[in-house]
Image (cartoon, rainbow, N blue to C red; front, side, top):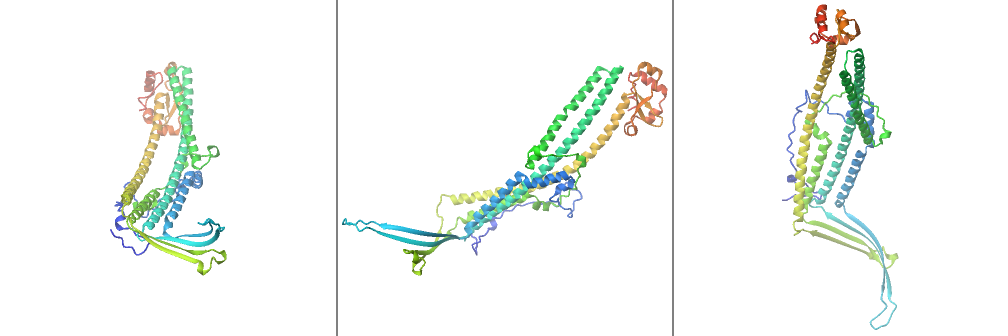
Length: 484
């Protein structure tokens, strides 16, 4: 295995470059009428909802969110590690200065003393060492650290995007909870009015204790739905407070209704653009590039390392003559070290880096495939949610019609010749015999007559005699056979 190197910059073997073998589709399966001119979502996508409060929360979260701040600190650490890894590419230069005091012993072999001798030596020197990166070991290690720093930057973008989507979802949950609370309060008010009406009928003798008890149970059940909704609202407000790094007491979310939120047009763009837009894909790509560089660095450890070391300076016993030409000295050493036997350490490290590269390659491929699937899933969910909303609106309209239809069937009514349905008061047996068609006490209104009334034309053609027969058949005067 030979790598032709013309400089100390190192190289990456072609065999080290991974092949992702990605199959990029030309368009999304769930996208309708998608063209190449469709722009991908903008970076400030939340403005499409046209909510000033949501925009303020998003901007604040980008500035003060603690998860984003921690991710920013991590890529600053990675930058520092990249500088550390790149240091061996440059010479290592050190300077030193010294003062050496020596005193020889004054004792001799004959037993005489001469008082000894003291000497002082001064020195100043520079030393430099440099490893020739002939095989690219240091260069690949530095490149791996740089790619890791890039991956940490994209990781910060992943955290930021996750935080922003969490803010948006929490805010929408606040709006949904407020809508549900208002709906529950309206249901409670409606159920209470019905309960009052049933109690009045009970007092008039046309209702039973069971009717009252059943409606009281309905009212109690409606009231029991409110506390969980308020709990959900409080939890989401507290979640928003955490996301903007403030205590819940310092956050006031006005909210409103989901009906006030705009629906931005979804333009996913082309699948090929997704590879450069999603930060999680870019992060995995950078990590794969880092692993590839580590493979090159591990391979270079099989070859000799060439080290150059030089030292020069001045040394003198007199400080005044320290920097004289005759006090100068220098040394220059070149060495080459070839690993011969290390118990398989270098080979094991090389195999480990190759396996790590393969792991990151498969992770990268999965991330890309998962990104395509996520986009298709989201587009399909948007389409089905839109269809569900349309069908639910039809259900609401049909339920209103059925509700008024059943109301006409269960209560005495007057047939309006011009078309319409009005609720009559309770009619006792004696009064029903004397006056089969009682006067209307409350009209249901134009909407009731159009969307939810009885079969008015059919009823208008019904004779007063038929009405009397139906009235006597039921103590409530139900016209269920006519209101089908």
